[in-house]
Length: 212
Image (cartoon, rainbow, N blue to C red; front, side, top):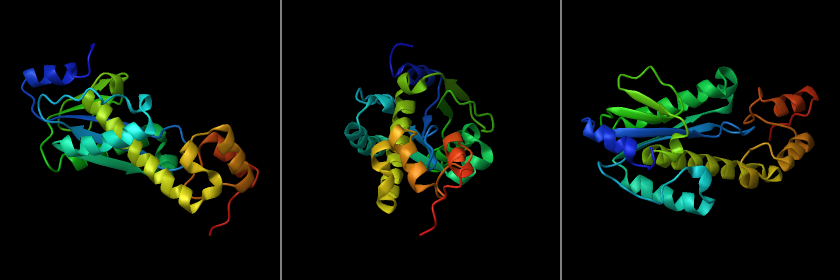
């Protein structure tokens, strides 16, 4: 596959009408939810600016977020909390977020095919194709990755307002050197993923933030 539209175009030729793409953001961070997006574009839709969210600047993602939700036939967002990540594991939590995003998008139109970024989903009553590095190969998956990333970043920016000393707006919860220093200084709190090793290390040393 050498362009961002080939998967969708081939499926349209097979007779599918509402082709959705789904992707998640936030597997690696120590804090906050994992978020998935799901997007269906009109048949034949093209926008060459839409690409894998990791390749775009924050400003460009924000601009494309507005374009995607305006142009999409339907879209959905699925959010799975840090508590659920600890209960399920991050892989299953990511799958759950994708299914939630799909279910939200499916309320407006009957999606008849789902493309995922490398995630097998076998519980739906429609065909699902998992594409390795799908966010760089499918415009609908790429769009879903942008919705997921922007939504999750906004959640972390809100968390930054509540806990400014952690500087979440900069590192978005990823285990950067600065973030690891912050949790060792200030401790962790409810929105942290307690099963993640750097967080467990802090907990084992008894550094827990007191509730506000």
